[in-house]
Image 1 (cartoon, rainbow, N blue to C red):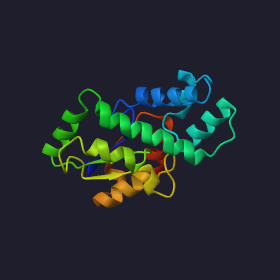
Image 2: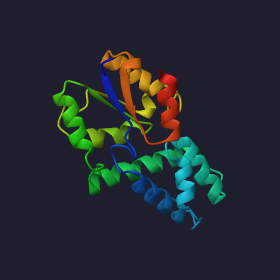
Image 3: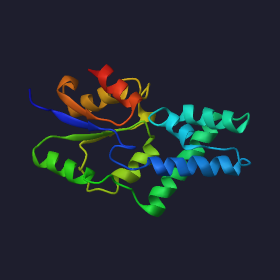
Image 4: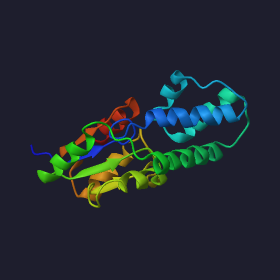
Length: 180
């Protein structure tokens, strides 16, 4: 069976964004009065929807607040970091996608992150580098639901059963397996 496409997760897989997420979360928590945000708490958020991270942050800080406001704040901080500091690509990530493209195998960027974060990542590579992309705010159910991977395969005109998924988190792996 030939591979029809490779569907890549973004955060922690292609882009070394986890340290930046941690830094943004820590700084927001500190601005709320110094409530501790540990690497363990940050790890609980890896690969999960941003609203879950926002809820955990509010609970940890003992603040009654709106999850959507926290999500907006996190996204703005991360987008600013990509603009100010550049995109921290994982070693070899860009070479791998170039090699797939040379072999005629399309790649898709499939992320739980919102479009506001995918756009600066996509803007840091040549146009067409990824054949398509799916952001977490563009599907009804983000990872760990299979929707993002099914949508990417559909956009590529590929049979999901012949796609390879590259992931780094349990929720992402669950989404990949459930997609077929």
